[in-house]
Length: 193
Image 1 (tube, rainbow, N blue to C red):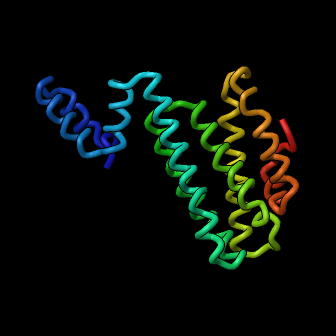
Image 2 (cartoon, rainbow, N blue to C red):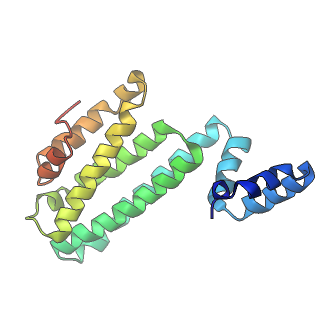
Image 3 (cartoon, rainbow, N blue to C red):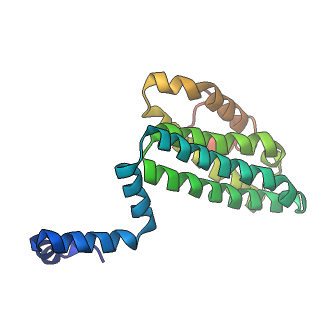
């Protein structure tokens, strides 16, 4: 149920005395951990804390890639493709949480590009497998992630884009040179920037 669907409730809440609204606000914030983290970041943290948060997200992603070779090596190649996609979605969740809290586009692009690039660097052979249901889903997912990164990249100032251009071009070249190419073409993604 949304407050916007009940305009009379919204009016009644806004008409409450300030002290009562403050009590409600504190209770509501305590029930939503994402909102609590957002408010903590906005109200109590500074630029150094943003760097710390980005480093922590990067560390968690690196841990994901450190453990993946062992867990994937026990599986058949097509099962590896599915398992990798599940782990990439988990990594994307880490980045989504960081982005929702900080609203920092620069660290979001850096982290998303790291996730894509590391998948290609460590598991490049999985992107050359014959098509199957699992590999097709992985290829489509990664192509979608690249499209998403390109959208975020295009909104950065051109001076900031310069920092990511080479790594992004490497990811585009790899993707177009792999079995992901049909998915890249279907999404109209460029060969390079």
